Image 1 (cartoon, rainbow, N blue to C red):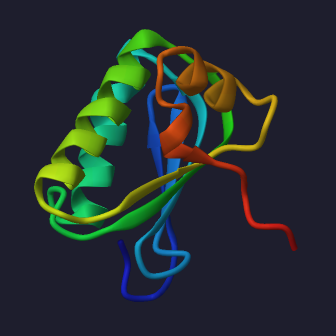
Image 2: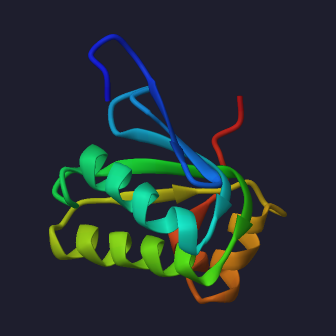
Image 3: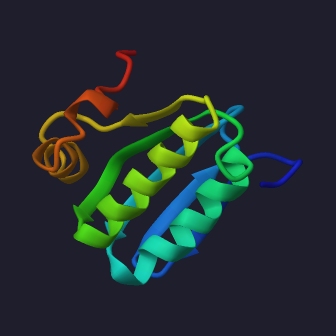
Length: 115
């Protein structure tokens, strides 16, 4: 993250926008084997390796593969272990929303706040 404002990082077929707000991260594009590791590294930076809570907006993810699901599940486990909240946000009907619900993470995904 930049002290000057949000930082957009390209991660293979995905992108991460970090620093729009304290503990806020937006992820978009294809979250698959090629992009999961670099996206995870960006999340680790924002959450200080799971020791600081964050909101991760996945509404712009166009494809969520198994590697992306595993990466998000690992981030949730790490946050839980450290007693912090990692909030996953995805608009209903999006790839991320549907994919996370299908793998049993429905209770960890919330719709974006209106407005």
